[in-house]
Amino acid sequence: MSKEKIAICEDLADIMPPEYHDMVENATFGNQDRSWKDIGSSKELIEQHSLCAGCPESIAFRFIMSSIPNPEDSVFVGSTGCTSLVFPHVGIHNIHSLFGNQNAVASGLKRALAVRFPDRIKDVFVLAGDGATVDIGLDMTMQSWFRQEKFTTICFDNELYANTGGQESGLMQRGFVAKMAPKGKNFDKVRLPEIAFEAGCHYVAILTVSKPNRVEQAIRRATYVAREFGPTYIQLYTPCILEIGKQSMEGLDEMKDSESIGGRFVMRELMTDEVKAFLKEKEAEDKARRKKAKTVTA
Image (cartoon, rainbow, N blue to C red; front, side, top):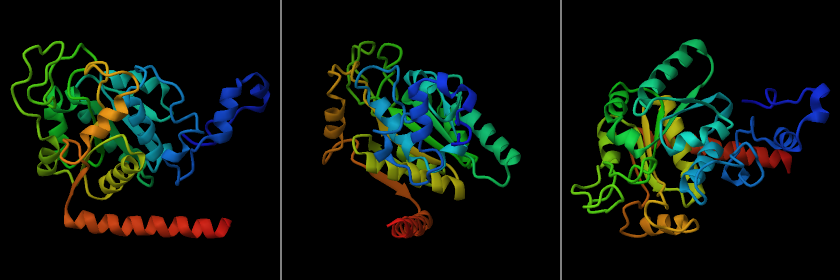
């Protein structure tokens, strides 16, 4: 997507709805410094969605879309689940895959884009729930890591199958009782971040989406590392407030509780020393560029 692609034909300008005019005039496409701070004024960062009121996944989508450094040349690969309800509203190229095979589709897509556009950076992101990532799709998820495919996998971890009634998933907590797991889960939450790192991911982050600056940092780091080194993985806690018995306004509180000291979603990052040095240099360059641009416009 780009400013040029969403330009309004002059002959049709008078019949286009005001919402579209607003999007064209204020869209952040083409701005390499767009961020989560643009969410309140940019319609292409999901003005509307069809998820439940207060759903943390809608927050995650907004933060992710505003954080990817190259939206005009990015593609989302989704899977069956609650996330699939959002993709029709997303102002980023996207593909809907079958349940569980999203990493296989992303692998072929990333390779095809590299052949078709050898001189341009094309970023691919998998966005899927915990069922598609760690249960039904685990084999294809891990095989993409073993093959060192250069894209980012993002798991929306709501700790159960939220889209189909509340069955237990590999990422559900031990002992949690759900509507379709009445006896409670009898094994521990799968340690997928550690597995991802051991399986070849060069950057791994686990966090909630309660703090936009942290999400933005993780998304950008994962993207940059995927371009240079290989697969990266981010696990975002996006609790299904409907299935865990919370009100629509309590999702943020649930995430904050889970990331407090000793909580299961205290932010963690796993990376090699080589990646750590690369990110330090990359972020210093970005900071210097923004400082220079600010000085020029002042």
